Image (tube, rainbow, N blue to C red; front, side, top):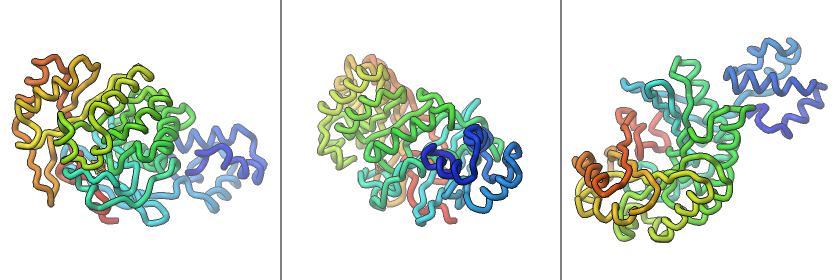
Amino acid sequence: MFALDTDDFAHIVREYDLAPFRLKQIREWIFGKYADDFRQMTNLPGALRTELAARYQVTESRIAAHRKTRDGTVKLLVRYPDGAAVEAVLMEYRNWTSACLSTQVGCAMGCTFCATGPLGFVRNLSWPELAEELWHCHWFAARHGLKPLRNMVLMGIGEPLANLDNVVKLVETASSPEFFNMGQRRIAISTVGLIPEIYKLARCKLAITLAVSLHAPNDALRNKLMPVTARYPLQDLLDACRNYTVMTGRRITFEYLLIDGVNDSSEHARELADLLKGFNCLVNLIQLNRVPGTAWRPSTRTDVFKKELEQRGINVTVRRSLGAEIDAACGQLRRGTLQA
Ligand code: SF4
């Protein structure tokens, strides 16, 4: 990504003998106006614009395809120079647009309800690649008249905390006034619950929301739905979450995907309320979106389950499901459903 890394830019400054303020000007064009061509940068000298356009690109990746639903949700296929591709989703709300980004090409976690799991893991996205994915979302929202992109959730393909260093750099870039200038409180990161990485993230003291996928009130059921969690017992996970809140002052969100006849009974609600008793947290109930090839069906008990938790003093919200029509809803992203 051009002008992302000041050190990388230094050799261009030397080669063209640029004044220091030129980097600021270029960044304003790229990250303020989402200019995708140096020739648009009208306050740069004409010869410099022509030279940069001949030798560099603003991004190395590109939007290879996109699809839009009737509810306004857009799915983008972002393709990198090595051929790897990930999907990002733009969801429009009342006054803003939220971008859901992928953090890895494929995923190694193998969650049984997810379209990505069976496809396996290919590689991590680097920090500049993540920044490009976010940039494409901003570019698309600006060029296609969507509401301003203000929120970012890392809940697409991949386990963000398995790519922690790059994800932390992305959050710092996204929130920097020099780049995307998004408030950290408008950024959420999801995890299946990788305990060592939750402790590491806590030490970074970011103001983001950490969304931990619970999906079950006990280890046996949780391990069945998300096999990787066998290494991370629930009580140890809750300790890591408590530490996260102490270190950052941020309340944890626990994600709970409601699956018909699997984890949505009154007994499950009681067990979940007992587990989280006295914990300063929010439970976010999610409607399962059907994924072909999986046996799970959406629960019909969402409202009842919500009431059962609330009666036991748990803070609960229900996530609005957008984008199911184009397989852009939670758990439905996968490599290659959009064709370039
Ligand atoms: S739900 Fe997330 S962590 Fe689990 S397999 Fe799918 S992409 Fe990976």
